[in-house]
Amino acid sequence: MNIDLSLNRVYWEYVQNHSYLRPPHNYLCSSLIPCIGVRATVPVYKRRGKKFKNDLVQLVKAFAQKYEGYKYVISMSGGIDSEITAEVFYELGIPFRVLIQRLFKGANDHDIIFAVKYCRDRKIPFKIVDLSLEKLKKEIIPDAIKHGQFTHSYSQIALCNLFNYINRQDDILINSGHNPDFHRGIGIGWWEDSPNIIKYAIAKHYKFFTFTSLEPIFCHYASNFDADQPGDKNNDFLYEAFPQLKRRIKMTGWEKSDNLVGELTNRIREVSNFRYQSFITWEEFTLAYMRKIFIEKGLEGKYYE
Image 1 (cartoon, one colour):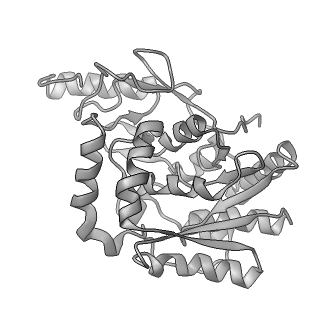
Image 2 (cartoon, helix red, strand yellow):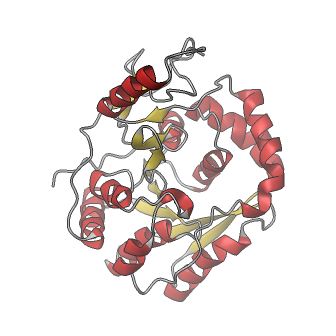
């Protein structure tokens, strides 16, 4: 299977300017049809192997061969998604170090404890990166919006802080975000703030990579969609592929920061001029959804920023 393993891989474009960067003015978007102004530029994802682990192992091997000589830095949150990526590197004997972001003097300690234990058990070098609320509001949010065009997700914005702890020349930051997002009417794709971290990496001249946005891994995740589960997926397939990893309740790490949501959202709104967040998907899904909207609801309201 021929898979594009480019660093900072862009797989979308905005229809008004044919660029991976959102148009700064008169951007076509709406809350009703969030996919109208952007489209995926890769063929519709359909291909995956029979076994998830085999696909991931082959991709990691190809990645390490392609980028031999670089240093790999895996961000771990305490969730199973980042842990399986680290586990494949570990099983293959590929050296790497880990960054673990600690929020607001320990607000996500209940989550990152899994990442710390994982690294200690395997003697993997790791660094805990502290992010204060003040730094997030005053430094990270404005910088992320300026260089990454973020519009809504404070959790995705917070990840930009990790780039401050890698070397631009030698390090590749590997993240396990970009899992398929699901829109109940449109189908699969990505909410824009998920891959906006790629815009940020490009603008700031960092090297970034994620395996979960690649076709086989994306398709495995999409095939295990479950709207009744946290994160909209059933994680059984991950634990079946990696039975040695400890099962845990799916968490975001932000459970103890609910009281800060309004404050962070307001700060984002102060800096970002974009009201809506786009949903990146393939044109055939967008057209099917638009036909449905035209027939069932009609188009009303404002559709330009």
